[in-house]
Structure formats: structure tokens, C-alpha cells
Length: 300
Image (tube, rainbow, N blue to C red):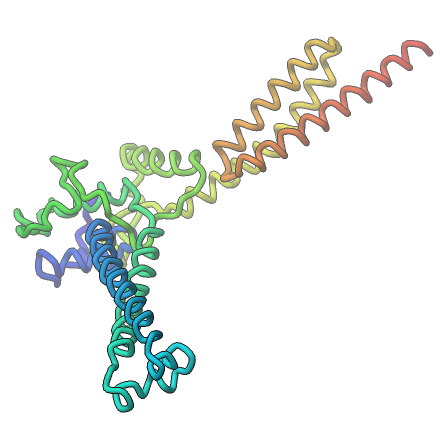
């Protein structure tokens, strides 16, 4: 993208304020570390503490069960809750209360770690954009100077980013064909000078092309291809009379439609198999019907 004169971040100080502002107007660039190793370490420590508490609690329960009065702790919560007042031996109760507090902390950390693990990685396009933004003159010669300066890599070291980065709102992931077209088309349009016909966005301050527009075009293209392949198959099979050639044509069109499904759509493998098999069946039925009609016509 080309930097426009109406910079929406001009009122922000270079550094964290301007970087945060950029992430605010472009959520796809809001990418942060999950600190997966530190989260795992924290879970390991909490797990070790709980295992120790569990062992102590089992020993305490076993010891209390040997006493006539304290054996009631395992049978009635009321007696266990009153153990401090009644017996003066509340170790089991203290362990349960401590375990309850630690479990709450552990479960919360476990759920948070699971949520973080399911967040998607940032798109390489957005990561490269952020690396370039950190090097712009608006961010100054030294955008960030702390230990976190290399978190996203840099233009000179694009692969030096942290491996546990996730995006708060990942870019829409379409089929491989649409993704390829969206990236190639934007670069081509800028190289061809088409950007001069567009006005800078009031939100981003840049001249750009929306992914949704390109995805809409690829969707139209996919629909047209999906309509033409069956028609082309029937036309070719109708004009060819050799059975061997027809079988080869059926195989070729099956390969074509499975390739199109893999590249032009997000179809699953099972869906690709189902559609390919159904398409092959339709072609075979057409060939069989056409062959029978031709044979009957020749006999007549």
C-alpha cells in the first residue's frame, strides 16, 4: 500500500501509541504472543501443586478414618466443616479448602491456555505489512527499542518474528485460488498504476483494494466454471463416438472437476469424492443412453 497524506494516526506519538492505533484501524494487524511455553510452565507448576495436595488429602482422609470421631468426616460434610470447633483437628478441611482454591486457579489457567491454543496464526501478508509499518518514517528511526522490538520480525529479518504469534482477527481464509488471486491482484493493480484512480480510505488513510471485492469476483468465476464443466463434458462426449475415447474423456473431466474442487472451493475430501463420483455416474449414464440410442438407430 502507498502511504496517503491524510494519515489517521498523525495525532499519535510514535511507538506504542501509533502501533496500537494502527492495530485499532486494521484488526488483522493486531497480533500478539501467546507465550505458550510460559503458559505450559505455569500449568505444570499448578499441576505439581495439586498432585502434592491430592496426596496429602488422601493421607489425611486415611488417617482420619482410623479415628472413631474423625471417621465421620468422610460420611457427613457437616462434621468435616465443624472439625475445627469440635475436634481441634482441621487438617483435612484445610487441605480441601486449599485444594478448592488451587483447582479454581488451575482450571481457569487450563481453559485460557486451551482458548489461546485455538487462536489462528496471523496471515503472512498482514505480518509483512506490520513489519513494513514499523519501518515507516511516521514510526521514527527506532519504532521500538525494548526487548519486544523483534516480536514481529523486521523488513531486514522477515522471518525473525516470534513463533507463537496469533491474530485477534485473522484475515478471511478463502480457498487457495481466491487467496492467490487476492494477493497477486493487489500487487498487479498497484504496479499497473490503478491505485491513482482510487481515493485514500478515511479509516486507514491508505489507498487499497478490499479483499471482499476480489473474493466476490473469484466467486463469480467459480460459479461460471462449475456451470461450464458439465456442459463441456456432455458436448465433448456427444461429438466423440469411440468408446475408448469417451472413457478417456470421462477420466479427464473427472480429474478436472476434482482439481477445481480442491483449488476453487473449500470442499472437504469426502465432498470431493462424493461430487466426483456423482459426476462420473452422470457421464456414464449419458454415454450408455447415447450408445443404446445409436445402436437402436443403426439396427432400424
